[in-house]
Length: 440
Image (cartoon, rainbow, N blue to C red; front, side, top):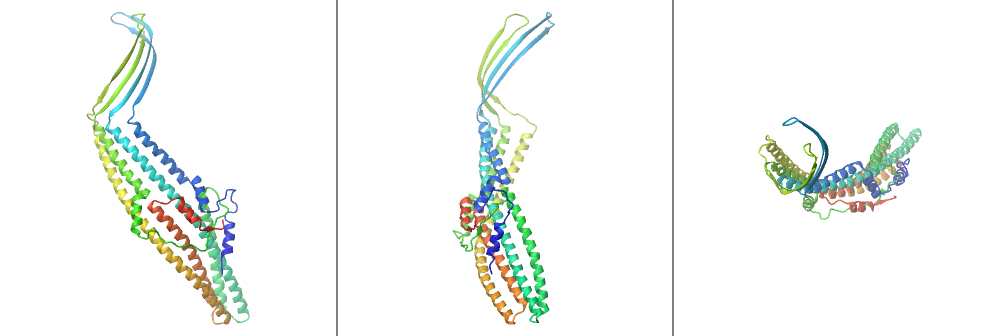
């Protein structure tokens, strides 16, 4: 028996009420997700915002220039030594340049800004890799749910045929009432399984539609001949070494430690003096109630300005202690991330090797189940096997086919997870899996 036609029929009708936008294969789904996934959109906005922290850090080392201008109408009323009242105008403007020469906090802020920008690179790499993973997972979830529904419908049809045969045989005395009751019970169970499978397919469709913000009309299915390849290199520790070096989670966590360390230095800068180069140009034009003359003058100044903090109520020391604690937290988080990445890498590696063995075993089990069903049907027709034996053989075959379908998708997902764990996952890996799809 085969479920090829039902499965293709189901996938052709997949989300038939969808809008005009189509996504026929895995790459199509991924590219739609790139444009529409809100999680990635948030990560992209956060990335762009954090990149500005680098520019802000640089800005604290550069000069600042300020310009002030004012115009006043002055009214004076003098009582001593002789009463006098008068009005006059006052105009002024000033231009001042301040170039930091030594500010420890600014130097730390500059280094911190660079670290935050580098951390942002790691975080956006995480988001992009996770989008590939989520796109593949959602795509295969729909395919597997469609496979499961196809198997359930095919099994139900086979049970209906067996039930009808049992009822005819019972009517002529060639079968027992047990065969009829067993057939009806299995049929009722098959109906319930079909309803459950159909509901699950609808749920998986909705999850995919949410990811890409549209409903694909048609999905390419997995080709029947799936090549099974072990990880290259096969050494698990070699993959772990790559992960420790390239995994963006580790990279981002390491940059977070640097950010925390520079925060300590920035707060310690509150204890240090600051030295600035200051240059200014000023202009003033004033009248006077004592004379009709107008006083007009300009002032140019160049020099250095030293400020020495003496006491700030203990705030600086408190901020340093807080930053030290944050640094320790960041270091612990980095160690935890390294352990997690090691675990994920090993799990993915084992899942691939174990998945290969599982797929091969289920392929053999499927072939054996088909032969067992054929033999049971011959035995039933010969009267040496009961109807329940046929039902059991059918159930075993369809369950094996369902498990094989799940194992094939799980094997491919394990390949994606391994590349994600080591930090090398990209669209090329997705394209390689996309070549295994057909019927798009």
